Length: 152
Image 1 (cartoon, rainbow, N blue to C red):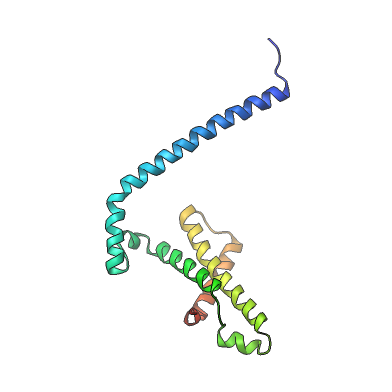
Image 2: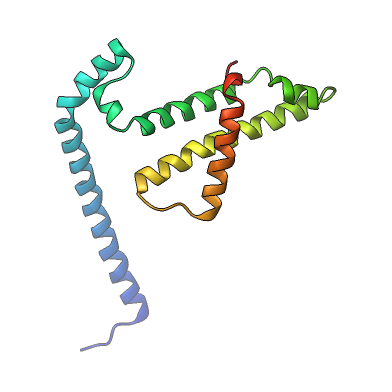
C-alpha cells in the first residue's frame, strides 16, 4: 500500500468537507422550509392580530425581543434620516453643527448597540462579558435620557 502524500490527504479532506457542507446546506434548507410551513398556523393569525391590535400573541411571548428589534430598526432609520440634534447637544456645540451631529449619531449608535447586546444575550442564551455589561448600562442610560428626543 502506497503512503498518502500531504497533498492527497489535503485533497481528500477538502472533498469530504465539500460533501458535508452540501449535505448540511440541503439539510438546513429542508428544516427551514419545514419550520416555515409548520409555523404558518400561528404566524398568519399573529399577523392579523398585529394589524388589528398593534401586537400579536406570539409577539408578547418574547415582548422584550419584539420591542428590541423594533427599537433597533427605528433608531437606525432615524439615524439615516437625521435632521437635527437634541437641545443640550446643540447648546454644547453652538457654532459647530457637524460636531453636534457627530455626537448625536454616536449616541444613537450606543443605543442601538444596547439593544443588539440584549438580543445577543437572549438569542444566544449566554452570559454577558464585562465589556458588554458596561456598554449595555451606558446605552440604556442614554436611551432613558434621550427618549423624548427620538423623533425626526
